[in-house]
Amino acid sequence: MELLTIVLALLSALTLFHGYRILSTRVKRFPPGPTPLPIIGNLHLLGDQPHQSLAKLAKTHGPLMCLRLGFINTVVVSSAAMAKQVLQKQDLAFSSRWPPNAVHACDQPKYSVVWLPVASRWRSLRKVLNSNIFSGNRLDANQHVRRRKVQELIAYCAKGSESGEAVDVGLAAFRTSLNLLSNIIFSRDLTDPFSDSGKEFKDLVWNIMAEAGKPNLVDYFPLLEKMDPQGIRRRMTNHFGKMIQNFHGLITERLEKGKSEETDDVIDVLLAISKENPEEMDTTHMERMCVDLFLAGTDTTSNTLEWAMAEAIRNPEIMKKAKSELEEIVGKGKIIGEEDVQKLPYLRSMVKETLRIHPPVPFLIPRKVEEDVEVGGYSVPKNCQVLVNAWAIGRDEDTWKNPLEFNPERFLQDSEMDVRGMDFELIPFGAGRRICPGLPLAIRMVPVMLGSLLNSFHWKLLQQELDMDEKFGITLRKALPLRALPIPL
Image (cartoon, rainbow, N blue to C red; front, side, top):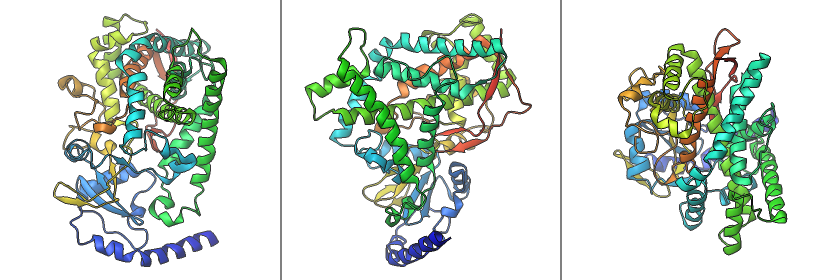
């Protein structure tokens, strides 16, 4: 209680001190929004599911909505048309990122391609990602690794099927994604693909995502930064430290052993770049790039697969149609290959529909404007935080018929609509110059994992009803893990 009293007293003083700044902004034509309260502004409206709360507010105040969160002006984008303005037509003006205070742990924004401003260092790191990890040639060369990891996923589920034990679908998918990335980067598994290991790393990733997505007083009242009243920065420093230490050990091991004739992985490429140009890539940059890759590439993929499986189990007719297509095109009981995906329009539609209604990141990574910008006839002021609510856009009643219904057929009727950042009604990976660089890997991996699981087993819930509640963080996962019994065909 004493800490709360001190914090409130400080906030009251700061409110008076900053009052002139708040008053000065009122003369501008801001987007509409709810009336802010003294001190806290509109913070009380966020709740524990901010993506849902802000989607409801947008129905009242419009698709470009302004809120004051503490001392921070925040504009929320909730429609495809406004997203196009921000992410395409004025992409450069909105290209800077707004790192939450939690992410500043271990100075991550100084090294991370996710948070760096669009400048020479960012372009250099982005080029490394696009050319050496996510290029078409590199992905084609790694296709055998992805196939082996999917085979291991199916073998793990078959083991559960034989013993009559339910499978934690999200955890199994996480292990598959984790080992896929670790093989591409380090040529080794980081967890046993045939056991229930991997939970510790999964918990570490989720703890980072949850802490970074948690409402933090420091983000809204920056002068509280040194106090860290909720301890979020302290916990994030611990989480990031563990992850960085893991990758430091793996990189040091490779440096000591040297390049093997058997490996041609990402670390070899990064070490070669470092040797040729130490200023462009050093060990710290490698460690931080690994943090970015494993955070972005494991949790998002496993969450998407878990949501897709949950929707398939919850909708038996959809499951039946998907299985029928797989049996006809691939053959019953077979693991599907990446070359099969283009011949499976219903499966592809299921993935798109999952990404529409359950986007892996509910708010695209927050943006920041460095100068005043005009959007849709309104002023977005300098240093304003900009949130694009991908969750709300995917459920917009003006765009989607029956938006809460899981209906893959909608994408069969409009098969040209895609997730690659050109159709702003569907932007789970973002758009513009800061679109997620891992998109090419995700759109190869998710359909193959989903199709193989559906084509290899029947799936049965052990409980009566399937809980579809969401748990909010930077990523969006199921509040209760999906546990289902794989039954032999």
